[in-house]
Picture 1 (cartoon, rainbow, N blue to C red):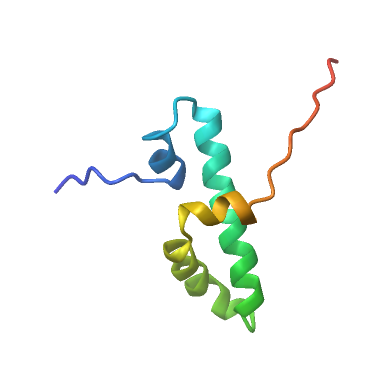
Picture 2: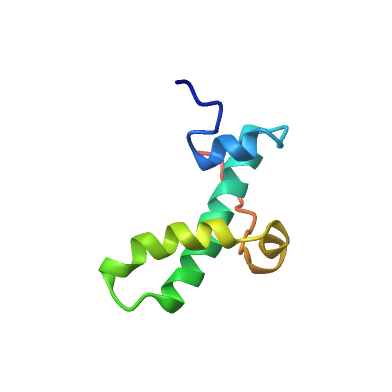
Length: 78
């Protein structure tokens, strides 16, 4: 059976973003917010993994606007 579900978080974002870079930034922002939230509730390394997956599921899109820490990086030509 072939699933048409995205295989990676970036793929899910790529479905709604025009630019692959923007899709990747969005996916990483989601992971950052979920990781921060999970860190606050995990009591040890064994509990982080499953809590992280549960937290990923619970992050609402509007939360990314308020909780994600995205900044522009200045590039310097070599």
